[in-house]
Image 1: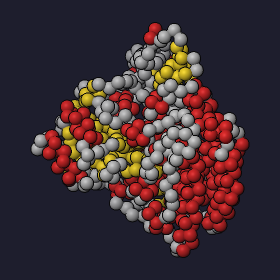
Image 2: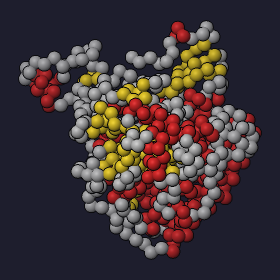
Image 3: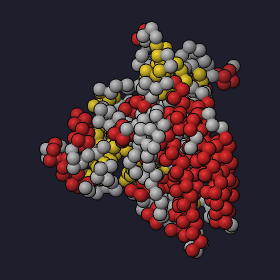
Length: 384
Length: 191
C-alpha cells in the first residue's frame, strides 16, 4: 500500500485525521477528503479520487470515433451537451469538416441552455450546502423545463448523444423556438431576480462565503483553473470570446468576472456570483441564437455527418468552454483504424480539484463544504 | 507568436539541434530531450516573450510498434499573456521510463503526472507525491499501455470469466491469486 503522506505517528497530540466522504452528501459525489485537523482548523487536506473511474480513455480506444460520444456524455453528467460538443469539435478539426450555420446555431442554443441548467444545479446545491434550501427548489424547477425541451428534441433527459461528428442527432421540433422563448421569459422575469434576492443578497450567505477559499490569480493560472473558477479570481478569460468556435463571435454577451464586492477577490462568493450572472448572459445568447434561427431556412442536420469516420494520421488538442470551464480533448489518430489511437480528456473539474489542498489550508471544517461547492466539481468528470 | 518563431526562440536558448521541430502538423510540436524538459519548462514560463503561464494538458501516449518503441509525453502550453500556444513532446523508453517533474513550474502538473504514472507507469523524479490517482493503490500494471491485458482476478475476486480461463482451470492450472485462492465455478463442468 502506498503511503498517504502522513501516518498516525506523525500527528501532533492535538491533531486528528478526519475522513469526509466518499458518501458525504455535500462532497457532490463520491469524493473522499482526508483532513488533518487541529480542533476545528484544517491543517492539510488530501483529496482521494477515483471512486467513479469508468475507464473512459480505455473505452475510447476500443470503439469507433462516433461511438465515443455516448461515453463523453457520461463524464460530466450534469452538462452532457457541452461534453459531446467538445468531442464533436475535436473530431471535426481532425476531419476538417465545417458544419453549416444552421447546425452551429442549434449547437449554441443547446450548449447555452445546458449551461443555464448546469449552473442551476451548481448554484442551487451550493445554497443548499450553506443552508439555503428554497433557491434549490426554484432552480431545479427551471432546470426541469430545460430538460423537458431537451427530451422533446432528442428523447433523452440527461445523457443526450445529441452533438454528432458533423451534425446533430435530431433537428429541432416544430414549435421549439416559441417554447424556448417562453421559458427564457419566465426565467429572466421570475427565477433569476428571485435567485439574486433570495441567495446573493442574503446577508447570511454573503457572510458565509465572501471571505473564504480565496484563490489568487497566479494560483488559479498555475493550477489551470478555468471557466467560472478562473473568472471568479478576476481575469475575463472565456474561450467563447478568446477563441470562438461554433460561431460564438456573432453573439453579443458580457464575460462575467468576480468583483470582490464583499471581501477579497477570488472568494467562494465571487465564483458563485460569476455562475449566477452567467445564467443571464447565456439567456441573452439563446435569445440572439433564436433570432438567427428564425431567419434561417431549415437545413439537413445530417448533411455533413460522415458515413465512415477515419481521420488521417494526425493529432489535435481541442478546447471548448463547457459550463465548468475549459474542456480539452487530445485525440491521436493513427490513420489506419476507425478507432481513436488515444483520447485524453483534460477536464476542468480535475484541475479544480487539484488546487483544493492549497485553498483549504487553514480553513474551518465547516468552510470546507462551502469551498467544495464553490469549485463546482462533478466527480464523473474528475474520475472519467 | 506563431509556432515557428516559438521554436526559434527555444532553439536560440537551448542551442541549435536540441529541439526537433515538426512544422507540418495540425498543431506543430517540438521534441525535447527527457533530461532537458524541466529546464525547458522553466524557460518557457519565465521568458517574457514566451511566458507560457498555463499548462493546458499533459498526456502520455504509448507507441509500442514504432522503432524504437516509445512512450510519449505531450505538454500543451498556453500563454494567457500573449494568447499563443505550443506543444512540447518528450520521448521515453518503454522500459523503466523516467523524467523530471514540472510541478514546480505549473502546479497542475502534479495531478497530470500522477495520472501518467497511474496509467502508463512513467516515473517523475522529484515529484512530491507520486501515487496512483484514479486506480486503487494495490492495482498491478498500467492499463492504458497498448499491450495491457485485463487481469482475471483482482484481490482474489474472479473478475473476468472467459472460456479460455475455464479451459486453463480445467487443465488443472491453479488460477487463484490473493487471499481466497478462488477457483472458477465452471471448473466442475467436466467432473
